[in-house]
Image 1 (cartoon, rainbow, N blue to C red):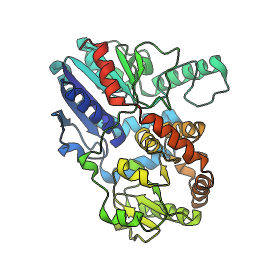
Image 2 (image 1 turned 90 degrees about the horizontal axis):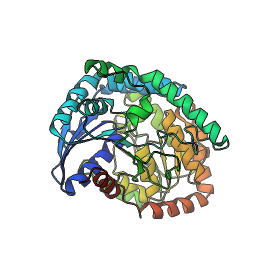
Image 3 (image 1 turned 180 degrees about the vertical axis):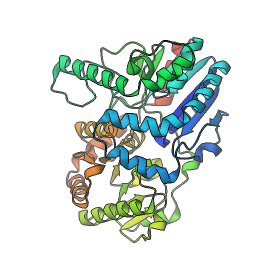
Length: 424
């Protein structure tokens, strides 16, 4: 079968699609993957092991110098719906028309379409030509259930959960309906009634690409919703290897904590320098060694020593197992990678979805109290680091969950579910 796939976002939104595309291609299908990365053009030279056709569209969406202004504007916004609307306006809307053109071409050339749940251009194009569509959900706060809710509050009962979901769906629809409806008008289609259920979820097949350790299937989910697990992949060539200097640092003393904010690390030197000093001082106050990741740390005038090692990038799958704990922003990919490595997390959330992951990790016993970037200080982060070091049960629990995750194979399960559903 010819399969067209499309995703948008940062590394955490793209890596799972690369993994699934490779899995489908290896299973004998002909796959085209269209990528729009909002903050990087590094995927332009990605080579596929099995021959997936990879296309880069409108990447990067934003200029590097604009990224810091946008990130700060978003994480200082307390209203989750305003956060989503802001991200779409500045990081999605400028590329929307180009992505829509690519979506329509994918629908012309392929039998089955698979998209990131935010990818309304592909969902609309597939609906217009009446071709089957699979939505891939990367966070377990999209599919409504009376047994859970997006706020992570579990003492409300089923009616309370239903009310929160109704309010959430109403708020999401009101905040972003204009984007899909603009494209639907172009194709003479009726407006969407509910963004979450009509676009983010597919009635053909919705894959919940989250480990069952976080996201067990809820009994009231539609039969079209399946939990496939984390769409993991072996280390990508673009992610590199562990440099010799880092290997030397690891051998100089006790296991360090790894600190990364991913694409949320400030890019401009003033804010990046201030953030790096905060992270460094927190590690020193907590009395732990640290590896701190930041793209242009050298330009900030910092130097590594025997206690703190600065690095521009490192393959998380290779380095996390050597660390004591992982400090990160709470993105879906980093969260599952840290847990798969059997390490407790310290979450410094920048947006509401990341806050959800922070609460989930604390609920299952592998993280302390959630921190928020807009309130972060040296004292707060140092206290969180000490908490993890003083509570070895967090690591014990993380090791147990990692063992269970390693029994899962999200890509193989997703391929199986897709083939079963569409009779391949």
